Amino acid sequence: MKRLNFDAHFVDLFNHTNDLIHFVDMDSRILTVNPAWVRNLGFSLEEVKGKCIYDFIDLDYSDMYLSYRQDVISKKEASEIEFCFKAKDGEQVIVDGQVGCVYEEEEPVYTRGVFRNITAKKQAETWLERSQRRLNAFLTSAPSAVIVIDSQQTILEWNPKAEQIFGFSADEVLGQKLADKIIPLEYREKHTRGMLHFLKTGEGPVLNKTVELTALNKLGKRFPINLSISNVRVENEWLFIGFISDITEHKLLQEENIRQESQILQSKLLDQKKDEFLSMASHELKTPLTSLKAYVQLIEKAAAEGKPVQLPFVGKASSNILRLESLIADLLDVSKIKANKIHYNFETFSFKEMLEESVESIRFSTYTHSIILENYIDVICFADKPRIEQVVQNLISNAIKYSPEAEKVLINSELINGQVRVSVRDFGIGIDNQNIKHLFKRFWRVENGDMKFQGLGIGLYISKEIIERHQGSLWVESEPGKGSTFYFSLPLSAS
Ligand code: ADP
Image (tube, rainbow, N blue to C red; front, side, top):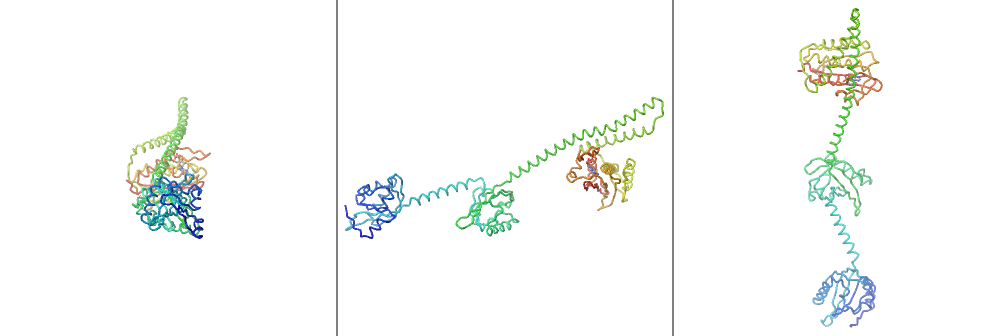
């Protein structure tokens, strides 16, 4: 064995460096190794000296090391190598470094290897690679669009789902400003302001929450999204990660559900109103019928006893017949409206006279209220006169019925934009806003607590139909507890 001749400094370096150093003779026997070598691989110097170097090299790397060493010996130059030793406990020790060859009189005498243990670094690298691979897999298969931007709003990450949702490929958007691509014009300034506010104060009202927003796709089409944003600080810079899902279908479904639910509710309500109507209708029909029966019996009794017929009884009987007639006519009107079978007979008439006649006929039937015709216009109208009368009478009789504490009902008519406008004002119970929108529906009656008003909930429905078939409109303004004003407007010539 060759004796090595180090001077003291080199011995010190040899003993204290962290690098692994070995000397190997031309028969591949280890001449010596330094303490770092012994420490890193876990053998004692005695276990190593004189042994073949390949016994300490991981089997997978021994061929590579052998040819590298031979290369070094023959070419007389040392290049870098990375390979694995096998430690005493069987673990791989990854190193990189150089082997050099020492010659005497042109003859190779031994080789010298100096290596650095890079196991930990390598393991960290592979961990990083693995986590990068995992991250890529996550980004590729994520069910949401994942978009990463920096504080200048530059797009840094754009996964395949983002490509699918927004229609932009990653190449088209990476490095571009987010706002220019997917944020609708009217929200861009707000977005920039929000970002600046965050950078200044650290506050972001939309951070770490899910918010519903509108976004733009490549074709400029707007669509609803759910967005959750998280922020992270990486290498002294804020990054914002947005998780986005397209909720167009979800929204449509939601709207459809709401529509269906409200339809079900409406039809339930209508069913309920129909039931109420049936019981009200039988009651409404029964009342005049019972009176009628009683008066007819009295008349019959008088006739049987040979007494003179009492005229007031006859009057009462015929007014009950009229009441029955009008109830039946209303009911028939409802079914005619449903079947679209109401025929209108248009004629020319004086609107003023029609109004006076209607008011007059109602005046006879009320002792409680004064019906005051405040203002009227004197115009000639072309419409179905009995049907318009029916509307006026219905509004006035409602005004009387729903203002039991009041004493008057005010009627006005005026000409506005070539249309006659009639108003019927009462000072009664009024109607709250919630009911106003339903008032003109079939069978709709407002629940009035204790106060029971008789009626079938069809008068306004019929009136509205009549007015609309004359190209006019019927509406109401009302304040609960103060009274209501029903209006209708009618073109002078409505055919
Ligand atoms: P009804 O036979 O029940 O009076 P209508 O169709 O004429 O039927 O009216 C529908 C509902 O509108 C009534 O049940 C009542 O609740 C409300 N209503 C109509 N007119 C008035 C009014 N002048 N003041 C307060 N409520 C009214």
